Image (cartoon, rainbow, N blue to C red):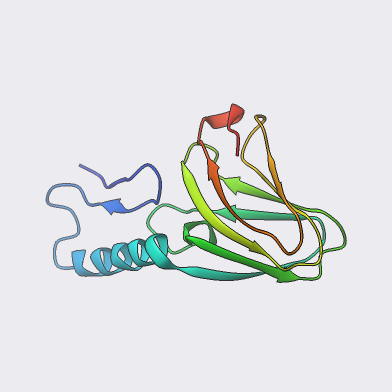
Length: 132
């Protein structure tokens, strides 16, 4: 049986009998993913007007952090897309980018955080119609 992954933070669940002698590497990566999801802080430097926060199965990725501190010098309102759109996400966001940050996950509603504001946001992971 091949590995599968958890729905929201992409922890790898090795299949029975898989990864004999090497499962420790997978386990250690999973612990790092859990650590990031529970209390990780990402200082995210925004540029331009679009950014993607991606969570990748079985690996450390920017979308897996719990706290996002936005900085940088975007050229206007920056739209941050949470990907994939079928994962529930909860972030604490501090926007110090100098511009409005708008979070989106699908065609549902979006949320904008003005420069200087801090807010909790929730993405519902409802696929193409997901909303934040």
